[in-house]
Image (cartoon, rainbow, N blue to C red):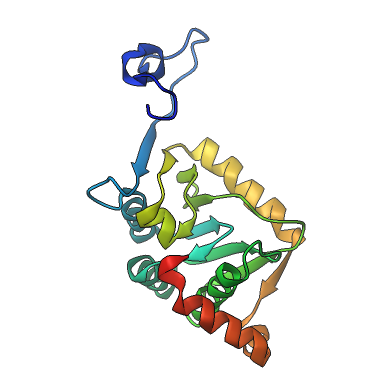
Length: 207
């Protein structure tokens, strides 16, 4: 409402619950918004709900991966429970501290069986989570603490296997443009890289 300069809740067309004129069935969508004025970190909480309910796989695409302790624990728990967790992050940083922190957290998850892919065909700006081919989440929120607590964000959670399947296929189509970050590769990183990662992680609550 603030961005539009008008009360959008008064426009009934945005809140139609009946199928459209074309006769197509509606798709259930939940809008999740949060920001510094919210009582709870609703976007973060929604990610936790998705991760803890996953049974087969979790696909994540995000330009910044700086999770808080709860999200990091949820992903570790999912991986240890046999869920296939795949994370895709960019190779070209637009902020060195953020990129260092992203690699540090991704590297930690490698020890729990999470697969990490580094996208090398430009800057990855997709912000999507897909779970079990059944539910997906896309929007403005990065997988980072700023999006959880400081920024105004809005995501759409789509409860539809068709839409989720398309998004998962897009994730799989991006894999040929990625380089997988293995535990062996991560352990061979240089001293400068290690320093940047530790420095980035130190300031992660501010990033």
